Length: 234
Image 1 (tube, rainbow, N blue to C red):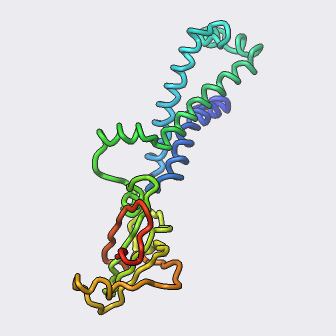
Image 2: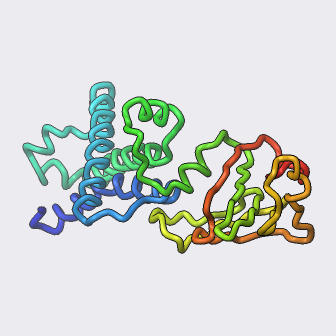
Image 3: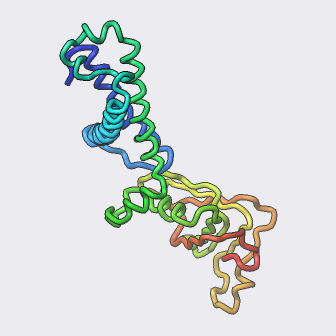
């Protein structure tokens, strides 16, 4: 742990890329709460990796632009004698390296398609996110997500997914919101296939239905290229 103020500031700055990656991932995918030790280790790992790439890029720039980049050898040997007359210049280069590392961490946090394709070849099948998020978001891009719910009381409700709780913990205190076209089957209606049209009703005049997780027995999720019609929903 750094013992001087300057060393502490440098230590904090070196962790900035990891923090940016963490914030970006949380804005895109619900993350489980981590212990302080694991969270710090995650920030440090990402920061070390992206900073290493950024420093390597600086090394390449130093090879091709020796007259227009800081001499790290002289900085280490001469210390303040080399740094004092060039403080602004060194801070500018240091900021550029940190900005490059942060941009790389941000890109990794956004999980581009090529990275997802590579990671799926090595990552295990265990998914450390909410099952709702995993199922609702894994469909093709720009598709509509249609959700049908068998409720605990024996009724059924279905509609286009508009919103859902992104809480990672699989608790009953979560909700999802379905949008029109909405369909509903009351308790006690026939479930025979030939009675399909009579048992599924269009909820005319209803724009949204909020369903609590504690009331859901089963969910049926479909990915549709266009919104369903009332005749085919359910």
